[in-house]
Length: 166
Image 1 (cartoon, one colour):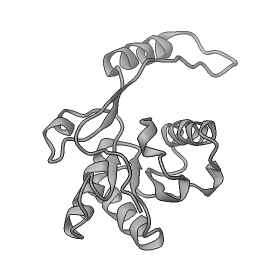
Image 2 (cartoon, helix red, strand yellow):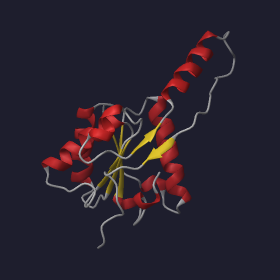
Image 3 (cartoon, helix red, strand yellow):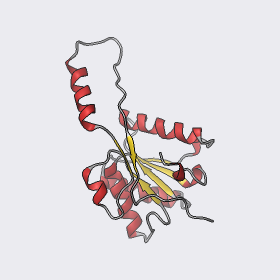
Image 4 (cartoon, helix red, strand yellow):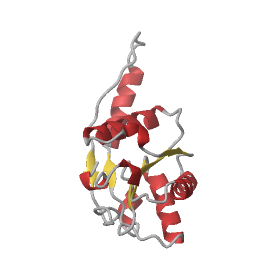
């Protein structure tokens, strides 16, 4: 996560998350909360809105976050589809990205670089993840859950900037 997104405190940072019951969401939120805590902020005070893991879910989450937390200066969407919905609502409301509000996504889908502004996102090694999933699925059953760690990279583009002053 880019340090400048944590800039002025957790009350200005908000998360557009997918459905709470998805393991992907639980894992990504755990990472966000850990990063917030590492910066000395209270992860329990971080506004999180759960909505469908879609563009429309991102639109719904953005509306709720902006209405309930009007001082938000950065929205972390837990996938790029949701981030496109967040960007759409910000544009409709005349809120400048990244001047007023920064937006990030997760997954680095192909269109992320073509959006205006281009979306800052976390790139995952999807081919490696797919291969690991297949390898785990083909193995005999195990009494313990199996997990594999993969790499990731923050891809900084035009949708993020330091928080506005004031």
